[in-house]
Amino acid sequence: MAFEGLSERLQGAISSVGKGGKISEADLRQMMREIRLALLEADVNFKVVKKFVKQVNERALGSDVLKSLSPAQQVVKIVDEELTDLMGGEREPLNMASQPPTVMMMVGLQGAGKTTTVGKLAKYITEELGKKKPLLVAGDVYRPAAVDQLKTIGQQLGFEVYDEGTQVSPVEIAKRALDQAKLNGNQVVIIDTAGRLHVNEELMDELRNIKAAVNPDEILLTVDAMTGQDAVNVADAFNEALDITGVVITKLDGDTRGGAALSIRSIIDKPIKFTGQGEKLDALEPFYPDRMSSRILGMGDMMTLIEKAQKDFDEAEAEKMAGKIKDASFDFNDFVAQMDQVNKMGSIKDIIKMIPGMNKIPGLDEFDVSEKEMLRVKAIVQSMTPYERENPDEISQSRRRRIAKGCGLDLQAVNQLIKQFNQTRQVMSQMSNGKMSGMNKMMKR
Ligand code: GDP
Image 1 (cartoon, rainbow, N blue to C red):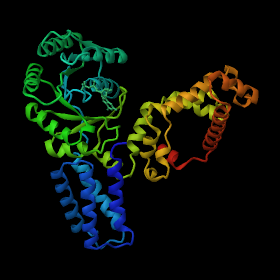
Image 2 (cartoon, rainbow, N blue to C red):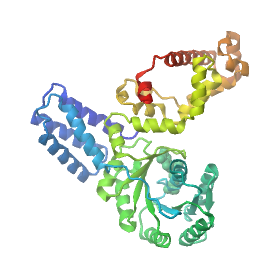
Image 3 (cartoon, protein in one colour):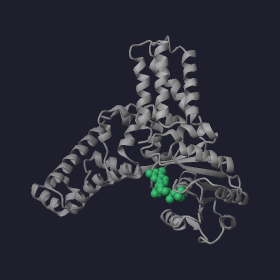
Image 4 (cartoon, protein in one colour):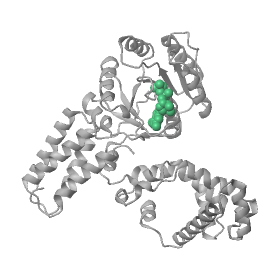
């Protein structure tokens, strides 16, 4: 997960000072040194680090941290507020035109995730903002296969793609796409543009021309979080040339140290609007500085978790499931359906980390259900007869042996799954009978 190292070090630095109650000025200095190192190691721009540490230090000295009996808590509050501020303070939503179509231009270097983000964004805008008929425009005429890639994405999502192949100038393509959108009533037009391996003038000129031709409401820059400081330099160059309106930081699901996310706002003074959290087309998260700060400081992110649950869980389906749990008719078909639902929300480990206080649970890092594991479970369930799936208690030893043979796994794997299934069923029935866990209570509030 992104920010893992930073998260650990920051929490370590803060908690180490507060153990014995009051702290001295020397303790505070030591902690500031550690916070500084933690940020530098996370590849945060050094100017940003300097300013940040100075600010936290001044606020800590100015408040009653030194007199307090719970200094760590107060420092956490200050660091949390400053981190939030560093990443922009408030969430900045997308600019929408008062008269449709809203025109968005996606820019960035090759490989940053532009084309993928065009698709993700179109999906987000239709599902979350209720806009209809997005038109995706294939304006990357240089990268081989970029046009086809966008067409495939359009097909997957059921959205229209405008393309004129690769022999026409992208400025002309953008203009004609916009004309078509006006005629056809597309509410949003998202233009994919060409990238290069590095920032260069030819690229910037072309982008400036497209901008002049279509006058976009949003110019969103995609930068790859994995490139660290480079992402910040790239953002600076694109902003100089195009006066961008926002940033999408992609690949924040990877093992990035997170420096780009923490530095960009402060260096170019443009908001981060979204983060890319995976290759799938629903892996786009609106960026909330306060929630991100909370995650970095290990305080969880209940808001995002609840929103994810609301979005991904089908309510009617959930009620049907609750009924089945109550009358104990939960079977293997339901088990697989549940697994698919949870899988839609992303990695189980990352989901758990969004619950306040859960990031410190020992062994959490091993707690992940990989896609391989899911496939194994499905293979076993598919090898059962419909009768067995619906009547889990009837699966005798001889049936288990047949199931194992059918899916090419050993008997032990089948036994283990059935045991796991029984345990799940038991926990679920306890929960539905009123013994709700703390998390459930929180979700219901
Ligand atoms: P473009 O050259 O800027 O158009 O980049 P693409 O959209 O083709 O993306 C380059 C690669 O990055 C592809 O393999 C994408 O699947 C991958 N990618 C894009 N966004 C993300 C993200 O948020 N997370 C991860 N893990 N991969 C991503």
